[in-house]
Image (cartoon, rainbow, N blue to C red):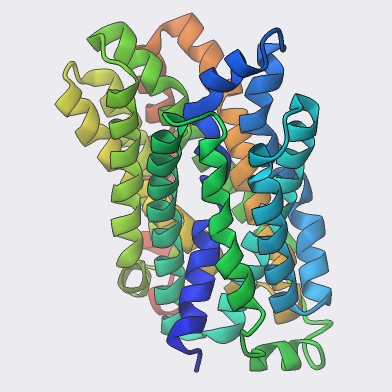
Length: 385
């Protein structure tokens, strides 16, 4: 039985991950002024480079996590996170900062895969589902706190948001004293050659990729749409995005109960349907309050996606392959983030914001309905849970 301190360590480590690259977003204009004459594209890469590094390295790092002590990978990953994430406090060269941001992505991939694999090792059955829901919730709430702290510190200096990354220091120390999971011992002996359905695992990774393309359209496009249609500024956009993140965090808290009652396929269908309905709603409404409600609906889908795909992945994968399998889903999540503007920008340019939201949301909702029907008609819920 993992102690309360051990549980908090895993949850705190998870909170460092998904929104980590966005922490410095409020300081980008100040950084552009500080590095006067620098290519704006390079300054923008400070925000996107970690996500690309995570997507490219999640699977290789997962293989490493499957072969060494996962607790040590978590501790080293958190230490590198603190060092490279806070680089803006002591570096004053743009190219050196870009290298540090790429290394930050490496550390995030290590922390995400090792923390989720450890959760699968420490917990089983219904308790695992509940804890994975808590993990996704901490990711959401941690993202909100990181963004708010980054925005407040950006008013002090462009270096201010880099302080937030030092939150990984206590996680590093706590990870060093985590107990050895009993599942690891069995995984390295009797289950080392266990079969893992890799085609299904990559299918889950593709589901994560597609869902993130839809959901990430909100932070990518909604701020511009609010400015064009409602003449609202950045603070209004920030509140709107935070509403979706908070809704997702609240839904994740009850994931353990939902997956037992409805099963994995039904929740995957609900993910695409809620995201699509919310995005289409953004295109239909004409008031800020309506936008907030629509984004909250999309947040329901996000709150279901992460814990559902995580528990599904660790349930399918052999214990000795868990971290690699988790890396596949992590790769899908961050490639989806990277690809989202590549999909949404041309659609907005061709159709306009509202029509683009309706089109992409309609496709996502249709996919959700198909998956929902498949789950309701064919999946034994008790087996899925």
